[in-house]
Image (cartoon, rainbow, N blue to C red; front, side, top):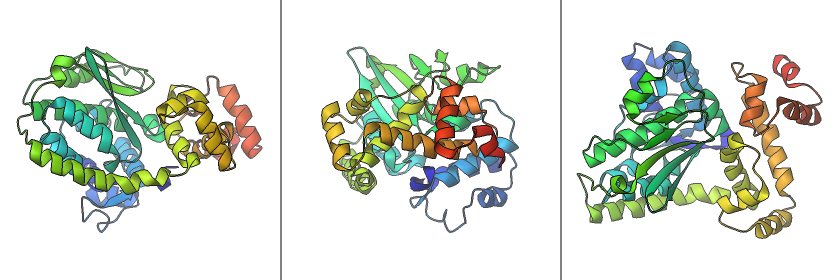
Length: 334
């Protein structure tokens, strides 16, 4: 699943820089991740998201820090995110900056989806990550910390969000989370998110340049187009939506259609025209993800079941026997 996804080479470079600062051998980490110096020569080239996952695992295995993700994310600045970061940096205000991240965040990583949800009083930046990233915890927490850190940087303020939500379990020590976010932090949520007040998102940026932001937005739209076109088929588009919804519970046809901004009947028709159905796409996706997640032996079978949207491990085990004629535990040790 992650093998077909890509992200900017600057993302592993940021993680490698942090790891090197902790005394880790950069060359060893690059090799473990299956990368080469050629892959990383151009920060704006693209690498496989599967390699980034391996790099995260390697760093996590070598450094005992329960808040590693938030510590890394709090050090990253807007322009280190490349084109999308520059668009945020020169946006008119925080609202436009978050809008740029929501529209063009796929340039940074195809394994993450961003959504900006607003009402009269609040704006919530939702960070939906691939289940393999949710399972590792730190990549998602790093991403949320980046949002808060960049929001403070570009507004030149000591911004304190109203609330942060994380999909990971509450750690034994959560003081570092409060120190970084400086707001209530809720754990065990379906997705990661940061909630800002209406007043906060109206804060002007310190480097506001609407003309430059317009040029950067045009360039970002051109850059993201070929990435978005990979989901041209209904099956591909549904799979892309589903992996972000699975950890929050079993996604149904109606919720998936709503995420795609079409009605359920239209989605059913389009899938039927491609010789598929919603239940088949969901089942195939779960089968593929199960194989991938079980390769991480640190994940309990019950955790894999949760990440695939099953309410009970027994339901996952029955499905797995149907797919592979074996149990998840025996499959993992084969």
